[in-house]
Image (cartoon, rainbow, N blue to C red; front, side, top):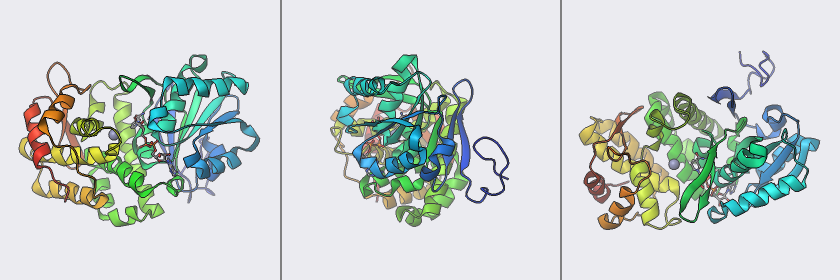
Length: 373
Ligand SMILES: NC(=O)c1ccc[n+]([C@@H]2O[C@H](COP(=O)([O-])OP(=O)(O)OC[C@H]3O[C@@H](n4cnc5c(N)ncnc54)[C@H](O)[C@@H]3O)[C@@H](O)[C@H]2O)c1
Ligand SMILES: [Zn+2]
């Protein structure tokens, strides 16, 4: 029997009851709810100590925001329009959001609801972290990348002119609503790029999910609600389990960066915007699979299964392959420790390891030969 959001046993809702996934425990409890049609029932799941909400959303997520608005009714204290261009994820925008919240008479027991992609949840979550030294917030991701990644795990922040996400705070949302229907208007390219992260979670942590979601790739791409729900719930489960085991990103959490060692370098070397983040990660995974074959004992059939899904999610634009350019970006990877690059490899589907002995040259070679077809 499923339990309702307040913990009561409830036969009547059990068929449609969302899955409850704990992302962080006390004192900053964060719960993800995953289900179809959650937007309409947002009032049952979103949390605010005062019962009042500041609804923050960009124009692109207007359909999802309108559904949440209807669900919350008079509990909405104010609506705040967000510019969700990556270039607007700045301290200046954070100040504007805080200005709007203060002008609306926000108190420290009110809560934000951020409806949108990762730019929105990062920015609004960051404002929630610093306003009155921290107010509650909720995340309603409307992109596949947001559902699989950005809204889960408690990291919030904005960009600085010297680099992405340099200013930030750990401040988990009280509730995260993952409703595949929020993706209805998401452009195809963003939809597919974000799915790379969802499949990545399956590959690093859940072999059964990887097999099921791999077999259902065409349903997922057709946005079949059941197939999406299965993949997204599984992805949230994997990310939540990893985050719970390592909330502040000391060790284990690094496995979430599978595909990101080279992915970040490809993204930066090509100029941000040439490749979507998820697309760069797809190439990074292709390279990591090559290295995993040689160093971690990944089987040929597992490697093929990963490549087949990546090929189906694409085709993705060709990345920068110039070793001189990539070397520069790999060398400054912020995950590099004194020991060397923290390379995440697969020993089999569903199991990732961190290897700090892979020379940078080996990544450059993998980048030269990697293929997604
Ligand atoms: N906090 C974290 O742990 C974390 C993890 C990964 C990424 N991020 C951050 O997330 C951001 C990227 O997030 P993203 O990939 O979701 O991209 P995004 O927020 O830029 O959204 C992608 C595009 O989709 C549009 N959009 C969003 N929802 C839509 C909808 N339902 N219908 C139509 N259009 C919609 C947006 O306007 C935008 O053009 C980056 O800033 C990145 O740094 C944070
Ligand atoms: Zn990522």
